[in-house]
Image (cartoon, rainbow, N blue to C red):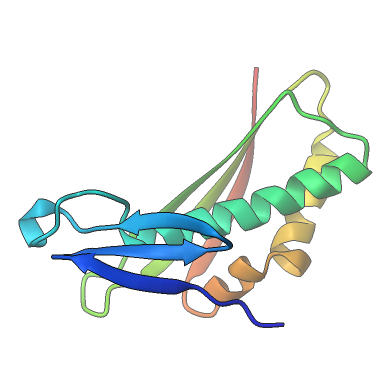
Amino acid sequence: MAEKVNVTWVDEMAFEAKVNGFSIMLDAEERVGGKDRGPRPKPLTLVSLAGCTGMDVISILTKMRVKPDFFDVEVEGELTDEHPKYFHTIRIKYIFKGKDLPMDKLQKAVNLSQDRYCGVSEMLRKSSKLIHEIVILD
């Protein structure tokens, strides 16, 4: 199975991406010739990672009959100093809130996502160190 996207130049540094029938405007900061009309490409890589692993975790927890009241995936990537700049380290924080959440099941869901199911994690792991942690809010 292949995935296909289309990215069309709009003007200056702006591009419009077509993804699964949805449009996303990409642009650069004004200091480099853009008009700041949309996100930059590299942070969207982090969005892809957060979405991929987040969907895995919720799917797995649902099968385990664990339903958090709140779930957030926070991803931070550290770029190299030299070009081509890429994320050398990526930190993934899984943030949960809920009553009596079983840490063992949360850990199992996160580990299954990271070690078996999340294809974005697997791709990024080829070039980046991935670190994750689980946080349960009061």
